[in-house]
Length: 601
Image 1 (cartoon, rainbow, N blue to C red):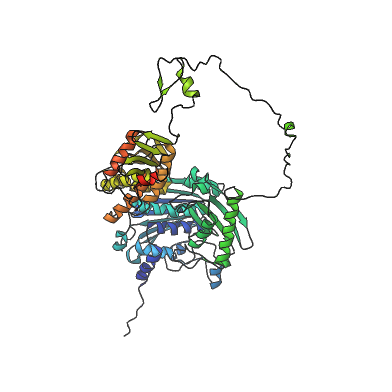
Image 2: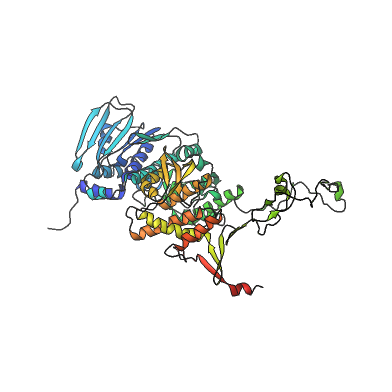
């Protein structure tokens, strides 16, 4: 007897589910796409416990007959294709008929559906081992899929699910991708009874972006539009000055289908060359429309990868379109040498007076001023010198004097034996010459060691903001702050999630700036740091976190405002375990020998 055997259908479906259903968000994606393909104009998503307990998608689409309601759970049951040629012109989301069979293999699924022309609906329950029960029920037109106890029969898969906030974040990502492609459809999403999105039918894509991602995103993008014989490009690209360290709001769509492409992402980034610093990414929402015969959407189980017939041509077209859009909006360097139709400028020569008559300057004098008048009460300037002058209004001499006695430029502050140079360096005498301390790097070393101690349960001190600052971060990033609340509090941040897509900053660690503009940038940088998974804080992960927070704090700190601040910074630096180098190995302190100073004289 041979060793080969045919796997039972239920086991084969469970294996296939490993590719299609990776987490709760995968179920939401497949059910949403089915609802769109069914012609729905209203789609509601209900989530409980981030999808572990319940994932429900309700639509008002075409519904299914009693026979189709049962058949849809069979593997490869589809209405989208019937011949090999159909694979070359797919314009719908689904087409392989694997999604429902895979979902039913790892969860308990209930379907209620009715076609508009039918008087009653059909209920189909798929339980353990593929057991199917049907019944005739009253139901509204459309379909209602309820997926309960995901991975109940594969505990190993369920064990590897992340926290509720992480899983919910992935669900919101899939919801956003589908909602962006269909602004003409109304969507809603609720989690644990709380409404997170209620999206009405939008007039255009820009209104849908506004409803989904907020006014701050819409205000930071410009229109992208071009048409060629190969592909039509439309959508929006972000302003270069709004590019962020955190990857987010980067979307590619082809013929209404979301896809990922590192290759085309390079085309967009190439168009932004020399406009944005290294390490940041602009937002973009790029829609491509092309002949379906020129793409292959059947190369990945989750249909998130696309193969173009000529990738390099699409690359060049996309690069040129984005580059032209940025230049048209005056973000790129462009010079127009065409002077046709321009207003001629006058050639000014010896007859200049006819354009601008010459006038003699008026000299103002104060006949009552007496520089030799005695001053009973001398006014001391900022540096200990007396301001000579007169009795009477002191503001007269403060405002009109030439800062007599000032020994330093405005960007150089003398602080006793310390000197702050342009807000970047502290200079102070040393035994062998002049010691120069880099202020930013000194703060980075100090904050690094403070953060390490805070991660070891010795928390940072929080300075409360005089006025709390609200920052709109989007629903996905708001979950990130909620999930990292304990870590942020441990480090001295008082940041409270509020609403659906906003956080309120009530306080920051000592040394950070509380100014509104800097707080907004701080929140953006925190999103970048917190995007990594820090569930298990090993010693190495702690050090990496401490380095990031130290660099963040140093970039948001203000220069010393008083001699005491400068002295305190020096004292704290030399109390560190290593006052010579930053965590990244850059030098903090340098001594300029007295001999090198002598050589300059």
